[in-house]
Image 1 (cartoon, rainbow, N blue to C red):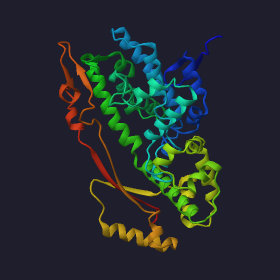
Image 2 (cartoon, helix red, strand yellow):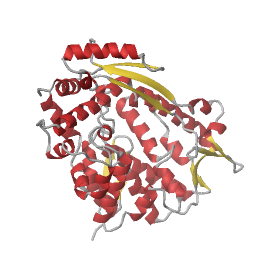
Image 3 (spheres, rainbow, N blue to C red):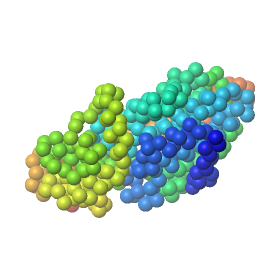
Image 4 (tube, helix red, strand yellow):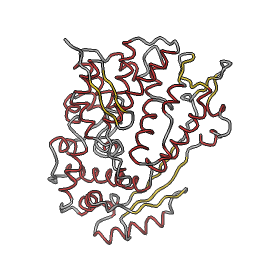
Length: 408
């Protein structure tokens, strides 16, 4: 029987070959195909119209980078077996399989107590059963329980294949040139010392560019103030829909979305009930958007207002500042919302959003980016960098924000 072969034409890297039968079969599985229907950047396309690429694109790209990274490490004399190669490729291919519709919005609204990483673990276990235990090593690598720790670092660290791909891909699709990185140089400089990933000193400037690009992409794209407003509106919309459903309101929804709106689903439900994962695997962006289009006409003022805002791009005003907002100022806006919409104070919480967000360009700690010098010494990039003072980027930048309907 001929080996299944496939070539994917990727807009960022060109042709991505898949020569492994198991990997091909997992890509073909409905659990993975669902990622075609989940946008990589959620609602970012409301700011950057080109940001319509999917979790499927990103997962395939990250796997492609893993292939290149392992080839590079092998040429430098590091033994990585075919089984370990397949395991690492599967671990990175499936690292985002637990994402729900519109990425993180679902985790903070209609599902509680479990994040997408934990859902990914549940998916991996499910696929391992379906494929007769062939994902065992991939799961070990994913959970950092493999004897070769550097394989996990390729999947999850401050310089992993996930981050390299999403910076390269997201800058490509948004058109934000500040996020462009030299991924080939980074991969060519990869090495392993004492079972840890390092970058050879010749690549230090590429690492500096990578860290700077990540910082710029976070504040220009991922945490762009309009994107923040849209994503929090969606979270509040789903919370409102769930509140109404649990209190007897009949809402238009697909069967899968209806299940999550009418049941309190938490961490233990995912681990203890296979049907929960099956229902979750049928949820994607289309369930949410299709419901919002109908909810625009709903009698509930809050559900209707949030749905109109997201479908027709009438987004909330957002204010950002370095300090917390004055309580008196917030109370004044609340009073205006209550009066305009004719709602009570409890319901006002859905139409005013007060929170803070923070980001590290480079996070100090055990998970560091190490630089390997010619004399064999290894240093943290924060200590090794010369002209660019990385230590200045190790402090978190925190911004407080306040969102509310315009014309208040």
